[in-house]
Amino acid sequence: MLNQFKPTWMIESIYTLMPDELKANGIKAILTDLDNTLIAWNNPSGTQELRQWLNEMKANQIPVIVVSNNNHKRVEKAVQRFDLPFVARALKPFKTGIQKALKEYQLQPDEVVMVGDQMLTDVLAANRMNIRSILVKPLTQTDAWNTRINRLMERKIQAQLMKKKNFKIQWRNHLDD
Ligand SMILES: [Mg+2]
Image (cartoon, rainbow, N blue to C red; front, side, top):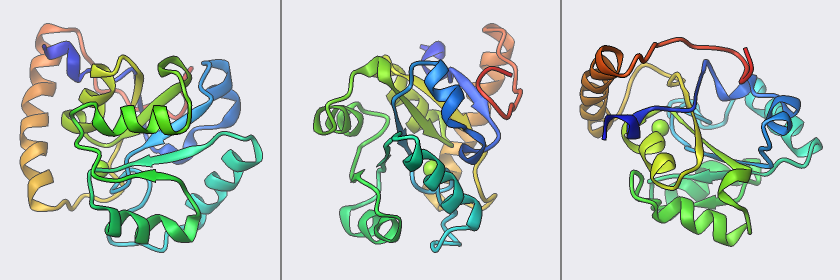
């Protein structure tokens, strides 16, 4: 069970992921969490860094698909200025949203990676779907109340993983670092 929370990779930020390293790992499309992974909740218009990264992905024909637990209205509002496809009410850590994204965009599990800032939702959902995952540092340190509860549990799980599963908290910049 503990292994279900283990991410494939741990990367500082989604913005450091580059097309070449994704391609080298057979990743054709990115599924990403929204809040605190792609966009900081307190900066909805996004940063220059975000826009540059999205342009880079677009230029390399790597689709970025948002898979968020938030409701349709909220997600649509957040992503429309970036013109991104999305699945709302994804119900992570259940498979629902990822399954829907794979089906809708005709992707195979081994062609995608799920990027997110939470082990309890993003990483667990990815592992249940047998797809690879990237845990990133949250863009802001402040969270909604429900996320704060998840963070407490996450710290306990990380401690267990370190103790029993040889898990190390080591943030890298690239997949093959
Ligand atoms: Mg998040």
